[in-house]
Length: 234
Image 1: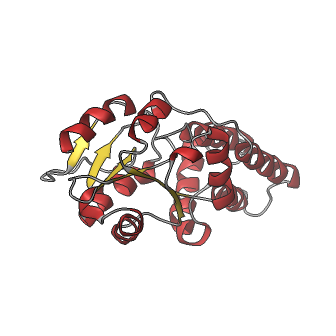
Image 2: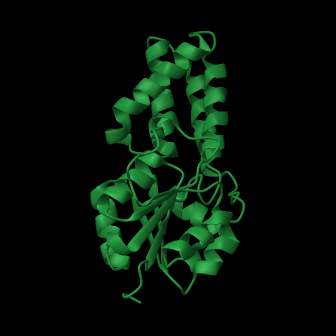
């Protein structure tokens, strides 16, 4: 197997394998409605984003960090006068996100099943450990992967480590995901192929221009096109 060009394929989870950002969008809008008497929605959205950017290294990625950011923003914009009832509603919204059903995206199962046994398959995702484990279990996809890595962030070093552990190194690996910033560019910089699968909803912090000058960059419309790219690489 090591004589082949490609031996391992990594998959992002949120908004690559299943829906995720839509739940953040719905909850964010709910939050803006709760605080509408204290701040204009656009201003409030900007304040929330500022808090999220500032606290990512403290709270990390995921629903729990998002919930804490909403509470912190509510305290700030109300100058500490936010009612306890409002805090409870924010917590309730966070709990509901942690219990939402898992909706896999089109072509996910059939595409992964077609690769099982031919390549080492790894799910590489960031976020809250318990939430990601819950979603993986609910998706029914867990048995299809040779490994699962839930990481605090995705960097070049992350991909070097993961692909060395599960594959034959980054040079013989591919990363598939919807975030250029987290899934594609750092994986390519580690030496692997990066296959970008855009999603209609992508968190603004994950936005990045498509890379230029990378021979190992690919873009597909949906996961149903992945098999063709994999076969082309070999």
